[in-house]
Length: 293
Image (tube, rainbow, N blue to C red; front, side):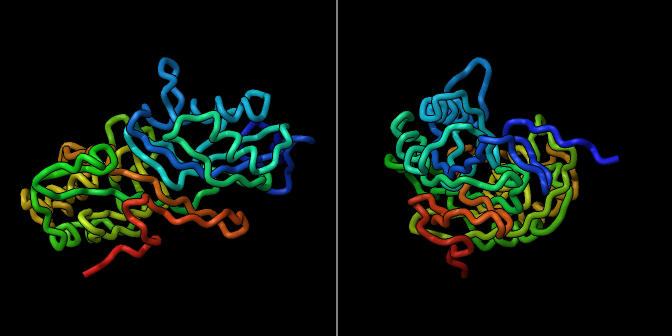
């Protein structure tokens, strides 16, 4: 017997079903600097989160309480140039209000870049097919004063060829238990890593990582392991050993959060969303465009 559909705000809407009369589903493209934020997800005892900031601003523009769903929650200190959120509302506003109006209600480190009404079946999290992060590393004797909280700094030289050799062991579908945080709540540790490229952009070493979904701290743990290989502390084959162990203690290396950026979320073609350069501004290259040897 078919289960009767019951609408829940911001929830999944099965094919063939509609939102309640007068309700619209709006998607936004969001950029933020995570330095001052305690992460994306709203917290009971801390209002300094991206979600709280957005919901307060959206509620003012909509003149009604607004809650939202994001494509991927990011930790404290982590940035985003390509975050996607959606919310349901009865408010009728032009796209300009959801962009400029909302931006005037927020601090400088959170910005909406586009707004678009979506069909009921769109869901920022569950409709996403691929997520891409970039991790920025500044390898130099002295830390930069201009990007102290936007990149990860190491005074050690990093061997990029060794890092690429180690990274090759991670591409594909694997049990990534060795790369998940202890507090990760995912039901399964199996993930499919679609792409892991490493290139140099100016003074930065950039890791570009794409997967259908990620575990908690997975990208930061990958970055930490590859940096250990790049420094010569471990061999490239050590990455394979860590992966096979399926045990977080086998690696124990978590890179800092401030080098990490959520830069792109890919959706099925029927959900036509605006195109934007993935960024950040320090890496003005399209996806897949990192210089390779």
